[in-house]
Length: 272
Image (tube, rainbow, N blue to C red; front, side, top):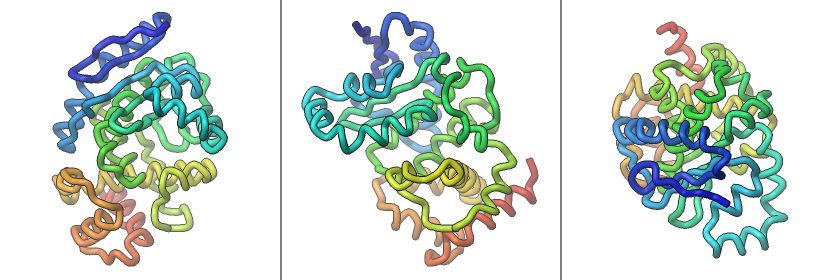
C-alpha cells in the first residue's frame, strides 16, 4: 500500500509508510531545489510531477507510469529492462517522463549506501551522510524534472543539475581532481546521448558527467545569463552548440575538440 503526500504546489510524494524518514528528507529538499531552478535557470516544476521513494527498479517503473503506459512498458519490457537492470546498481535516482507526467525515483539512505560507487568516486566529493546525499539527489533530479520539456542534450542536462546541487549544498560536489582527468581523457568527441552513454564504460560515463558540469560552470562565470537564455525556449542540440561556440568566440566545427583544454586552463589559472 502506498501513501501520497502533497509536497509543494503540484508535486506529489509517493512512498511506502515504512519510508517516512526518507520522504521527510525529500520533502525538505523540494522547496529549496525548486527555488534554485527558478532563480538560476528560469525553470518551473512540471505541472504533473510525482516523486517516489524508490526501492526497486521494476517497482518504480510500473508504479510511476500511468495505466496506459504500463501496458506499453509490459509489452516492450525485453527492449528496456536490460538497460534498467544494468544501471540500477550505480544509480542514486531516476527521472522518467510519461507524456505530461514526470516521475522521479530517489533511493532511500540504506540503498544509497549499498550502491556501486565505482563511477561516483571518480567524480564526487565524498559525502558520508546518506541523508545529505538523499537531499542532494532530490535537488539534482528535480532540476531534471523542471527541464524535461526542453529535452536538453545530456551534457547540459547533467551540467545544470550538478551545478544547482552545488548551490543547494553551498559547496562544490565534484572533485577538483576531475579537471586533470577531463584534460587527459580521449577521444575528444561530441557528447553522447543518454542512450549512447548507457552503453559506455565507467570511465567514459564519469568523463561525460564531469565535462558537462565544468562546462556549465565555465559558461556561468564567463557568460552569466547565457544558459538561462538558452533554456527559455526548446532548442535542438546543434543550435545550442552553435550559439555557445559563437558566444565563446570558438568555431563550431572543432568546439568539442578544444573546449576541454579551454575550461581546464580557466579553472586551473583561477584556482580553487
